[in-house]
Length: 491
Ligand code: AMP
Ligand code: MG
Image (tube, rainbow, N blue to C red; front, side, top):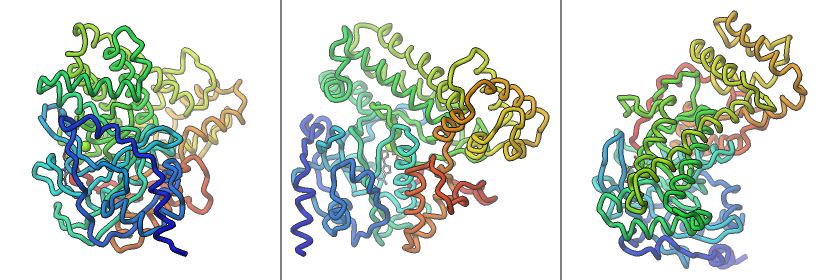
């Protein structure tokens, strides 16, 4: 078989449209990725590859390895780094931009346009003091987390693969380099708009807003105030995203405006964490000394970030009131969306006035008893009215308070079809989440070139509501050492 020749058409057939590149030099710098020395596969998401229309055999080829680590350019691609700004930890940080991510371009797929981006593929004009690289550790975390959130049904950028190299990279210690190949309809952030607004480049600001509306929010074009309507639509998507994060116990860790997607996707996985024991004040980012991005602050921070986006879009609106009115949608959609998700987690088929109290009460108990968040919800799927459920009760030190709640819950669900309730709950309470210690174990093995744990986790996390018999240990309580894992911004 002439593998190399045969392998090419799968990529050659890709229809590159490269819309972002056509915006021109005010928006990006066209440049080539820096090759990754002697790359090897660390992990591949065949599900993500299928969405792009990539052939299975191509993904196993040397051509794929070269293309997806930035060592060979797919014909038709037009690589670039984009410029954006952002508020970091509440302060305007000025110009940032793709300092280590290179957009290969955008391809047409049956699911619509998808941009393909290499993260860690060398310096760009926006690298500032950085080396343009990403380390194996953080690339594995981003790869698994993107596919995990997608598996949970939460909007996210996807990850096609991670390729590693023995090339050394200096962080707190010496580590090795890797590239994570990401995909999304667009990687445009709130910060892209802020960049042009802060520089009073209103023509470019409008060009960017029109680009986003035409491609992703076409209904806004019909509205009387297209840009205010865009802000409203982004606010709604962000509200649903935050509700999904809160419901599943996901902490992003660095909700700076440059890490907020204009499409309401989870983007830029760094020091994120899925909660172990439920602690509303949990801060997953070791560099976040003020706790700005604590779990329970995420919804308000998202609003703060939307406010920054609104401010950036002001030059395209008639007055400030338009922006404020558009932002209001976040305040109504977020609580509604969260309550709907919590109702599904509890297996409540319809809405009742007392549901809010039932939800608030269980959250209070989860916090005061430091109950493991994921395991609690999964075990609750087996709860039966009146009889209760020992495995759930055993998770609470304060049995009396739990019994009182269980009584309230039993009454609420007594008239529900129990089979239907269990079915709803099992599809809304995952068995498997990417806990820090699981990621850590996979990273340790990968550093020794054993990628089996990365692959096992990928399989579990892509179908997190399934039982996966024989893999119970991945759904178990975290070991004692998990609490001492420190994840910082360094990646
Ligand atoms: P992050 O905190 O990962 O969202 O990154 C914030 C900014 O720093 C973005 O502009 C990144 O492109 C840039 N950056 C982070 N790490 C590096 C690196 N190793 N080299 C170049 N730029 C980087
Ligand atoms: Mg970022």
